[in-house]
Length: 140
Figure 1 (cartoon, one colour):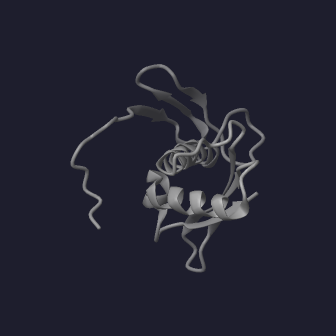
Figure 2 (cartoon, helix red, strand yellow; figure 1 turned 90 degrees about the vertical axis):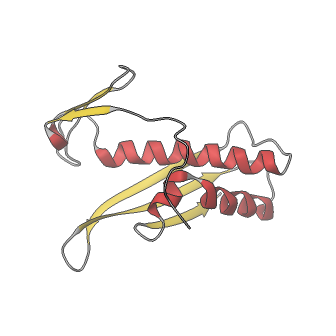
Figure 3 (tube, rainbow, N blue to C red; figure 1 turned 30 degrees about the vertical axis):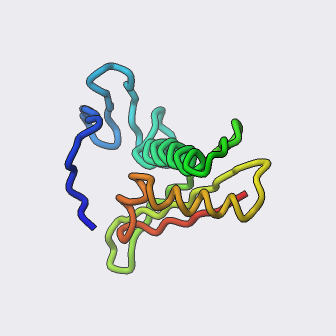
């Protein structure tokens, strides 16, 4: 399976200064955030939180796509809560692990599993992390 882009749909442009204790901005001005290290107690967000929000939003989009392909509507109150853990491997390298808690109220368990599995195959974040980051899917 090739991961080379044949068509670019969108390109985000961002600028960060100061690393984990700096500032991040998007070129269009829609995002302007102060950054801080996890657990530092300083004001601001961190890359793990931003990754979790991005992954969750993307995964809901993939769920909507999977539902539309089955000619059903995703529940309005569908949600994804992400846990993004930053840790170290046995070799001492920093690494992420993710758990996505997917809430699809009003759907039966089999359909929930079908939608989540389909979304996990098509979501760009899931595709990017596959084979590189442990991702667990918890379905409510």
